[in-house]
Image (cartoon, rainbow over all chains, first blue to last red; front, side):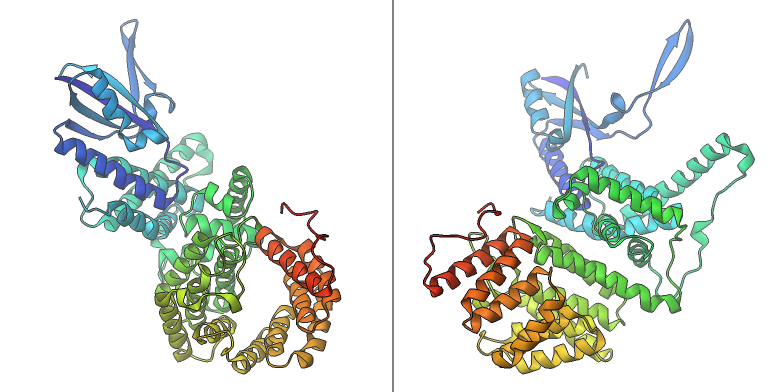
Length: 109
Length: 425
């Protein structure tokens, strides 16, 4: 077994209220299925206001993350899968992937 | 996890939307920021609930989140402003402290703000569908056959116009009330009507729009239970919606009331409509909207077209004409009375339609009277004029069918299809 971090990005700003309700339900069903299949280790929402920090010439510098990079990540999941292709299948089954994308990071956990 | 979670959450989000925008607007004082706050909170729910679980009381969760976020937003904006223009002084409004009246409700404030007379009716309709109905901009654009960018602009301008006119997010004074409420009813009815008989485009009906309008009429009944005309509007939208599915056949063609399959009318909507008429009448003498609902009820109560109580309908139109004199209402009255005595009603139809030269339904009504009088040659000419004016493909298709029928009766055959040139067929 290997571990993967999934980062779910996507746009939800232009959707109707009813559509957002529908998307919430589908995403909840997806997470619930992953959980009962023992695939999901952990996960949650990414709060807004992500920052990027780096040290330049020994001094830390905090850089606001532009919305088109990590700032558009809305939720994260830690999943257990046999290999990368299985992790890809999990990512593909994410309902929110239809409105953005899912990034897969193979990690040690 | 319940099987129908998507339907449940769809309903919760849609139902709570106006309360969320309203609660946010009470705090931010403007619709543009209120809309953003409400939208952000629904997206936060979309990202959080799948992991944390759907709250036991989702509506309460949403409203609390909206209030917190709106307060933060006002605070952040005030800080940003204070940083930028230190000379301007603090401008933090204590909007939360606004005095509450007896029937005060954020949703009611919201509806009245969206239907504010400083806005053009187009803008009122768009804003109401977005802010009260919770529709997405592209959906509204599709309903009114304009590009999304056009509708977006219309919404932005409407929000700016409200801000520029310094329209406060509050209820009108009692003196203003009698003017403002009919405006709201008109906007909801126009939305319904666009769904019931689309003014243009390929399809005759847009049932989703009818449902949105009916839902908003129902919300108004909850907010203003003592207003007879609000009940009347709810009744009207229910009774007409009950017939919606039978107005169009399998090919998308218009089916006239006289040809509709009455066994397929929605019984629960009919019952809801009748109940609303009853409660409207208990509240006082019927206003114009209630009278229209009562006319609709005369049709839905009749087991067959032949058994329609035309004298009752004419009497209701008489009442309506006396309240709301307009050539369109007079024409409808004349058409109803032509069902009792065509020869007698014809001169009236003839005169009124002359006053409505560019109104397609009037031309069609005149053509129909001519057809029934056996004056087929004149009927053809009149149907052609109606078809030229009508922007809706399904209606136009129906008119062209009538032209064919009249031509066949004239013995011309159907080889020449006049009026076909300017339609898609």
